[in-house]
Image (cartoon, rainbow, N blue to C red):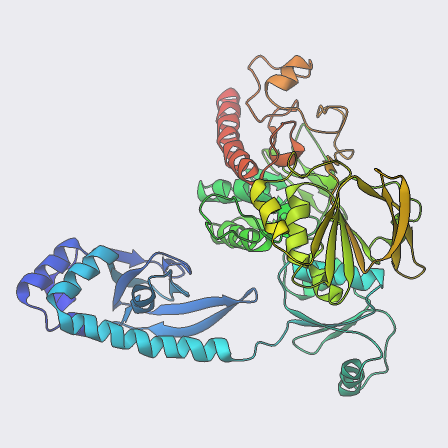
Length: 553
């Protein structure tokens, strides 16, 4: 408990009347922090803190790398910037050693400022000073973590660009045979290499690197650190990340295995307008980034660039590509779905070379001055069309049906109408694609007139629904004819349940293995429902583990 003398020793409060010091000692929180424990995380709610003992490190994440901005020693305060701006904390405040901090809630600070103009003036002055320091930090040019040299239509280069963009790693991309590329090779003192080349921030140059090799060099986790986990989650989309957050926060040893980048298909969405709590909307990658930081902060491990080769339904072991095995007491399947493929002649040959499934946001900058086409009539297609309208010369949405109203949200339809360079063609479909090294043109069939026309095309993006990709699962995990995983009552109806107890709501036909999100058989396919199911899955994991422990006893 705080004493009047301890509060009065803080310079900001030293001039307060005895009554105010006594009130602060009685009402302010007294935080005792262990080394490494946060007084407040980056983005935390505004409050005023004062350091009583120990040493507080100010940290902020830039481009995935944590950076120390300063220190707070006994007698100093922090929280003045959030109070001045009415915002969250721009950085995190972590104890570098055992420390003691007092905390005033925002309303407590306002009550104090109302009776002491001196305190309010000192806090405001300190806020102006520290905001200037933050501005100088953000004004510093941030060096990209990777410089990539490669041809636009090179498949390996495209894969590396998408990996870096999806994992939110800053990079410069240089096209060969340009002045910038010549300067790059001249500075490196090496002869030009035809394949994609990645230069890291420390100067290391990697020729034609594999994605996982680059991930390892960048410090991303690709192998499990532990020997056994309470829950292993396959898939790092909204459902998987939600399960990771709740699992880790509730004390479960939690690991996520993601074959590409956290966020899943939602992570490629240019804008999610109807997600609760974000009135201005939020991009898919920003939502994924926040969830990823939250899961890691709570202690979950996130593996990237790792695919699951198989699972043992008896032991719940995950066999990863390579030789690693993740041993877990329970599993959650959150693998989502993959875009449905088009059967147009020559289409597969041009994938990654002008033809893309999904939004491929990393390709947006390459569409400047181009005419691009999108196939689809759902929200994903509408969001992508809006995103590309800020880059491409013209964006055309090709819709097989007679209307968008049956499949796209009203707000998106209205936003598309307001874009002068976005056109919607109803009852139209792509009949053929053309190009040798890359896509150059497409043939569009007008289903009303039965006439086909050829159009130059700088990019074709496909959003025609999705399928569950669950062929890798063993036969005792029951699925429907389209590959969606059955859970709960659906498992019982299919005759796939053999235990005396009923399966839990999200439990598959294999006890202790749960499914959530788009991979689960359900009519609802939304980000919000995936997040909800991810959190629910953890509740059922707890019940399953408790039941198994009781049975063993």
